[in-house]
Image (cartoon, rainbow, N blue to C red):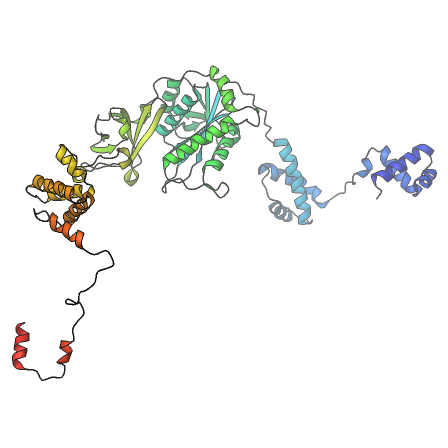
Length: 512
């Protein structure tokens, strides 16, 4: 096989001489080689194509095309080969595979779905979809992902479920974050949107119609089982799950609470909306400022029909009553109006409480069903408790009390324990302690008071002996037994070992 440079020399020699033999002598090859490349150039590459040969499968190609058409390009080559053998085909399976592949390729070319670029308009389209969120405390969560088509602005909100009130609350928050309502909203055919299809026409959920009327928005649904018709949110869901759901690829730790997941969603939106988009080369937050002028105003009051029944939180107790049960809410909602509803049935039934604030509806509490007399309380809903009656600390009300408590913690402990023990003449004993503090070191007096409190010594003459003992005792590590008093066991009992026992001594020992 000649190289490209050698072929060019051969053709150049032929153009120069016009003779096959002379060109062969100049190029250093046979004149037959010169003739081959000259004819190849004249045929414009037609000679490079392999000549078509008749094959055994040619007589069965119509049947192969029929099977590919019926299966919409999904029939397997081995299945087609078995069918051909039953029809009398005598060729090899490799030939069948090549033929089926060629027919499938032609079928895909004729039936491929051609996507036309979508030229979006400002303020027209918003798409939303869902993704599986991380598990928190063993419970699955949902990622609500909305995508504004023109500016590519994304909103990701963590939800506990895909029920209608949760979805409506997420849409309301999305509109308020965008600063307006688009003309159209596109989503899947969920039960919260479409109840059924009749003759290919989607029948809208009545509550969704009321919601759309409240926000003056038109809700459209894509073709069932056709994610390509809302590719913007499909891509946003994939990116959101890759960044927010703990996996081996992102090395994220498990979320300890639902609030932590919500904060992660806010940080994710901040990151993706402030960096330039790969298509527009501009940050979505900048484009949203331009698109916001084309959005419709958001109603001042959210759509709250689906959130449940209203309850007013008392002014001093963050608890609401719902169907004979009491449920706690965050103490910051004292005096506010909340919406309460139930979700689920049986042991999985839960009571969901929603509050509508300046940023839209937000779920503030979720409890299991309570029974009458047994309220459901979340300790996080209450502020830190002030010291109770059992934890009261002494607070001086007079100069004498203040002077006594200034001695230290031992004096405060003595006062609390002495009062609990019902000690009499406590003021006299406190004055005695203050007098001793002027004669001795106040630190020693405070220690003696604490020691007396621990050992419940509250009599009038108890404090002075404790001080005397503490002042006269030897230093630590110097305790020694004296010559006259020893703790060592004596040997007198051993001296009588083996001696006859006197009955009188036995009686005396028994009496002892």
